[in-house]
Image 1 (cartoon, helix red, strand yellow):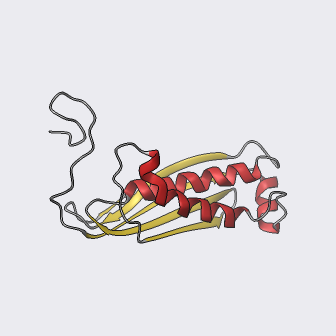
Image 2: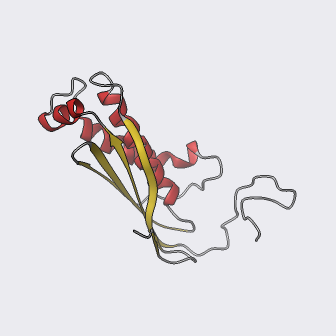
Length: 156
């Protein structure tokens, strides 16, 4: 199997997508920030000293999706045409889901993963003064659509 991100000498390279046709593509990623009961109570009551944790994390995630090529050296600069970052308070964690869309020559899986990761980092940053034990876990792509490889969904 030939790896597309390596040249003939085995060196990393950016894949040339010039010949590909733009298509509508979407990726969904998810992750969690596990938090102590004290943090979860403060999140539910809106009493985290740094302010509205979920709003800050949502905006941080959207901004991160648009900056992915600046963070990942081999990621293509593409038009992020839509990015939604949803945060849900579960019993002992904040569940983060990012959905990113484009109509371009390459997918948006890295943008969705970056959105979730940065949103999770924002949550940790916002709650660390209440409890330093917050932990980011389970960041992964759960679905993608479009492009040559078509649709994919992570098995349950």
